[in-house]
Amino acid sequence: MTTKTTRVIAMALLIGLLLVSCKSSVSENIGEKQSKECCTTSADGSTAAKLPDESVYNLSSVWKTQKGDSVPFSSFHGEVTVAAMVFTHCASACPRIVADIQRIERELQPQERGKVRFLLISMDPERDTPERMQEFAGQFQLNDHWTLISSNEDATMEMANILGVRVKKLSDGGFDHSNTIHVISPSGMIIHQQQGLAVDPAETLAALRGLLKAA
Picture 1 (cartoon, rainbow, N blue to C red):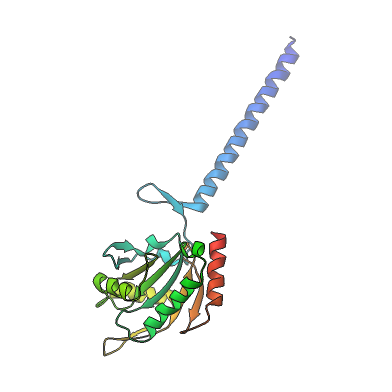
Picture 2 (picture 1 turned 120 degrees about the vertical axis):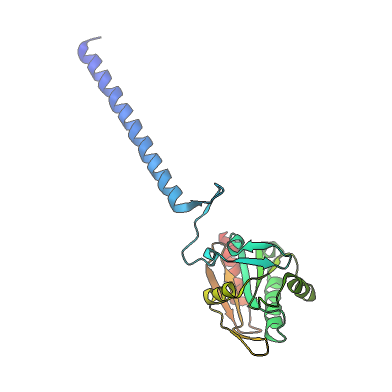
């Protein structure tokens, strides 16, 4: 083998090594960028999809369920959710809100129904204890797909502001409030709001099915 041939071979090998190194570096940079854009790492080392800035699941408040469990509101992310703010001592509007959500639940197909969480958020933290919420759930025959939660006054008003629900406490212990049902995406975006009582749920069902199809 001549000296010239040896030099050509050496140069070809060097160029090949440089190309491989460059490709590896580019791949690593793309992977790192995708990792930063798609995920965050929690304190326990697990990874999860990064929530949008407008997500309701960015709230740091802690709530009590009807079963007595303390849960951060952020723990509800990851599911398609139908939510409403109510209080269990309400004699008129709130039972109608629950009935409207039950109608939505009935009109979903069985395979759809199992993928939706139904969430009732109390606006009455003083009286809506886990025991009272459990009693309310039994009264309306709410199944395991339903979760009732209550927190403190600050968290309650923060939630009302985020959801755009008007809540005003009255002298008799009741509340003047908006009658709104919210469709929330798994990432915590409010996709649709059903305003009023005894409303045709066609648009709400369409919003739900759009989320379920995309999930």
